[in-house]
Amino acid sequence: MINKYLCLILAFIQTFLFSAYEHSDTQTIGVNKYMAYQTFEGFGTSSCWWAQNIASDEQADEIARLLYDDETGLGLDIFRYNIGGGEKDNPNSRIGDPSRRTESFYVFNEQTGEYEYDFTRDANARRMLDAAVKYGAKEIILFCNSPHFSMTSSGHASGGLEKYQSNLPKENYGAFVDYVLTIADWFVAQGYPVSAISPINEPQWSWGGDWVNQEGCHYTPDETVEVLELFATEMQKRGSPYKLSGPESGQLSPEYYEYIDKFFESDILNAFCDTYSGHSYWLDNNYQVKSETGKKFAEQYPDKKLEMSEWCELPLKIDSTTVESGIYMANVIIQDLNLFNAVSWQSWTAVNGDGLLDFRDGGLITYQRYYAFKHFSSFIKPGMKRVEALDSFNENSRIASTAFTDGRKTVIVLVNNGEESEIRLSGVYCKAEIYRTDSERGCENIYSGRFLRKTTLPEKSITTFVLT
Image 1: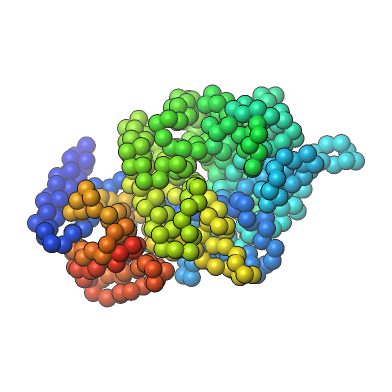
Image 2 (image 1 turned 90 degrees about the vertical axis):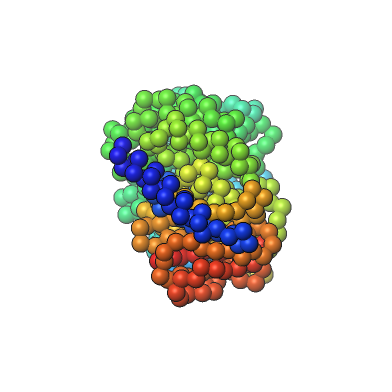
């Protein structure tokens, strides 16, 4: 308690000293290291729906380097591997897009008349996983969009025959648990750094009926808890060396807050899980809703963490090759870090039109979202704490900011959504490195040397300051 009040006093002094630096003609930014928030755990991306389509060692290696290498890539920490629902093997699949039909490890043996595991399958995606680990992926999260189609009520992994009906019958809950844990245990036995399993994805959406564009499964809040309780109980029995993540709520908003409450009202899940996982869809630039959710979660569950495990621009409206697409993504990341207090942030598709990389004219290209992501992932590392960014930006300012520190260095990311602006940095530092993305640059190092107090942010730009 004494330390808490001491930090508040120091925070007040820091704020007072900061105000003395303010100039009416120059916007000022500083950092209050005494007001600390979440400890960050990592950035990542998922393997849907592209990893199974990477057809060569060379492609896999280049993509993994660009995503996970600390020196020449994004330096991501987390790789989300999809345990597919097997629609590629389903002769009656309703999913029209072949690229969204997954190949499962769970295969029907016509000779025995039973399903068996074959871990030689999904070879392309596994090769991509191997390359990611080679280049520095420290955590593997195994996630499902749906149970295997053989376990569902409809016989499809694309949802029930009617909307808003769970496609997993209760009598198959146990089979689903064993299926996921058997696969996870195999990956662990091979030496993969599996940190968590995530068996449920976006349970509140309707999934099924006439909408069968991908694998998915609806669960009510009570069904979600019942399934995940079985996972937690069985994982405790087995002594599983990985966490239970979930339930990948499709929207972190008050409208679906019941999923959060039901999750932690469960004595089993409350004791077993320290993190709630959700997605940031449909809330871009909605500061009020994100702030409301973040504050409510922090107040209700101060000993729990919130992770943002999936986002891409939906619907995709901005040209991915323009700086505007990168700026848009950078704003969302800052919102989720500041307002949700997210301890991790993971993008959806890494290689696709709405992703970070893509194939065009036979070659691999980097989108501006890639460089936007790099402004965070290359400099904000696991273990760093988010601290208060003090700024003199008025309510109408077009500059967004976030700040992190490890006690030795401080990282400040600024997104200038408007016109060119001069800023002044406050604080005591010796050295500075400055990285910039704008219409002409992609996270380019534009300065390295002694600490400079004044700098100019070009219009529509992202700037990262690394201060020591």
